[in-house]
Image 1 (cartoon, helix red, strand yellow):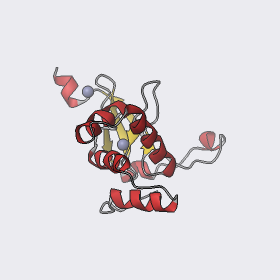
Image 2 (cartoon, rainbow, N blue to C red):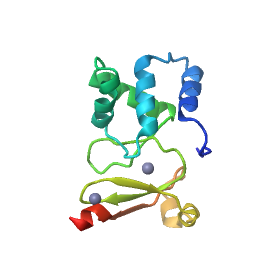
Image 3 (cartoon, rainbow, N blue to C red):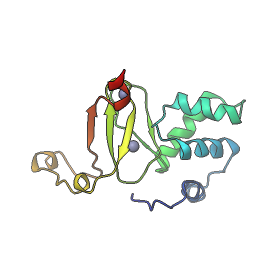
Image 4 (cartoon, rainbow, N blue to C red):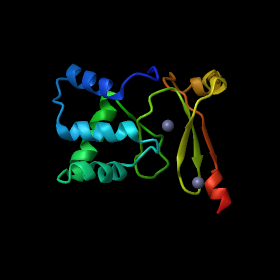
Length: 146
Ligand SMILES: [Zn+2]
Ligand SMILES: [Zn+2]
């Protein structure tokens, strides 16, 4: 799915909830609001800590279930896993990742060149490609300095 930069994340959220007959609860809204601000591909735990500042009574379980629900609805997606905790991706624009192998931060970047990379025959043999992302691994500028 390619979204216009200006498209409101909360608008997508309300639209998806309406489509699926889901109530817009304060919990869901709070999780949505935190995701909209998140630039760090947060874990469920990180989202939970942020949401708890606004809704002190919310449980980790509710936050986790909400994140999985949002993923199912296509409001967010999951970052490709590396055998670590699940990390959530609120950026639905076509983009690529630079992943720091030291601090595990994941940085988004856009590249027309990478968007246009053709899928090789060897990969097409496995099935139909529905999404394509280039993941670069390295040591980020901050980690290189320390
Ligand atoms: Zn780093
Ligand atoms: Zn990303």
